[in-house]
Length: 334
Length: 257
Image (tube, rainbow over all chains, first blue to last red; front, side, top):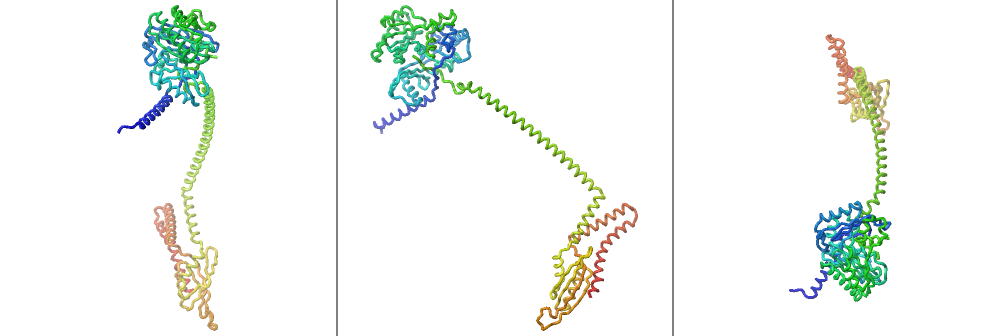
């Protein structure tokens, strides 16, 4: 005897309850992430380079900075696969930069490629009062954005906007195993700060009521984030599969134009300012293409010069080329 | 805009509070350590005091033990031992001489035949001896003769003497004592020993006799008079008993009659 529609409904209902319960149990079992804190040692690992900087957080200064190149293929950012293809090379590069600035024994921060992290802007009609329930809810909603099991995700979120019962949340998630590869490559990373580089750039944007578009181009990945006032209302990361510089510039320009149009059409956010951060620094092709796509609104996001007051002259150039996220982290600290 | 995002794992409670709690924990541990040290020092001091007291008590006990051993050795000396034995013997005699009036009455009642009744008993002590005065009534003279015979044969009494004898005249036949014969007599109470006492007495006597014999033998080891002396002492003890018996037989019965 086959079950009727009512019994199917009951089965589906039970299945849903079971999945909710499983999700909540997974949320409880998942490691809790820390609040934002800025260690004095920050390392950035990108597919083409690694940087290490020693910061004077209290005085908002960068004391030392070192950059080292990574051999192609050493790191392949992906949210669901192994990232570190050549761990000895990565260890060697990290050892070089950290020893150059004076290896510290304390906690350190880690900036990773946007391709390793999945980010999403989530809207909730109602928000539970209990923080753990809310985290479970965010984890549940993030499941559709993650290419791996949600119980394996490290999740962090911040409320961008709250109006009555509804709210908007910017959430980022990364596989625990993937982040573990980076932590294993440099033992001091654990317990400090781990962020995608675009998140570190967000504090550099000025507080404006008009819409702003942040474009982060770094090592074959482009991230576009639309920010209105102090909320992130759009975030998208895509890999640049084009190989030639001109094609890459066109791909980035196309992405910027598409994002601006999408923000205007769907989010009703009119982008008035485009901030471009390209590392290594953008070539003329990229600047021209983005300028053309944004009708001249694009500006290059550069770190402020006053942060390098105590930085050796030889390291200032490296900071200007690669230190925009570090400047963003310092700007995020009161 | 400000960000609060962070994908790093939150530090554990131990990591978060280890440094903060290190100082108060160290201070607390130091205080506890000082307290433990002070407590240990006090305990050690008390233990030493108790040990010294125990040592003093042990020394006192040793002294007392030595004193006891010395006293035991003193008691083991022949003169003190013989004195102790004599003291014990005399104490035994004193115990035997102790007079119980109830026992005396029971012994007198045991001598009375069914037709006689004891109407009066009086006890008079003179020096080391006790003299008992009886007044016995009997319905017939035969009953009183039986009583006197029993009294003469009794080992508890010696030297029975009849002091008075009377006959109650019938006066109208109403008195209960009319026609009864009344006799008043005296006897010396010797208190016959029980079997155990007799055995102890004979043992003491034989021990004393043997001691005397041994002393005499030590004085004169090869003289045959020692054996005679021993036999004489033995005869003396037994002769004393036979003298008593003889006194009873020879003195009391004729007097009673």
